[in-house]
Amino acid sequence: MDLGADDVAPQQISVDEIALRTDRLVARKRMSDRLRSTVREGLRAAVTDPLTGLYNRRYALP
Image 1 (cartoon, rainbow, N blue to C red):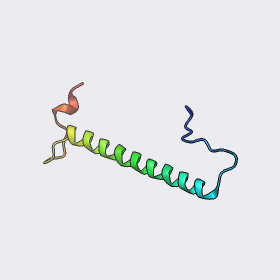
Image 2 (cartoon, rainbow, N blue to C red):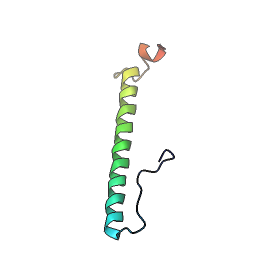
Image 3 (cartoon, helix red, strand yellow):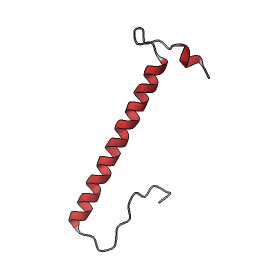
Image 4 (tube, rainbow, N blue to C red):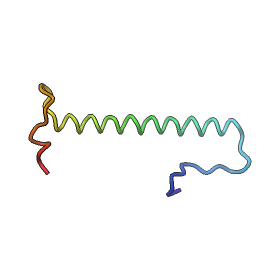
């Protein structure tokens, strides 16, 4: 699980269950991508001036 596995499936699994699990994993990936994009936009907004688009003083602070 530490190497990236998200789920464990038994040997006997139905096609419907595989489809359901796949849909759930795709939805989780999309949500993760949206969250990552939102955080990236927030960080960009925090260090740039909205009028000029230039970096502000927060960009230079450690």
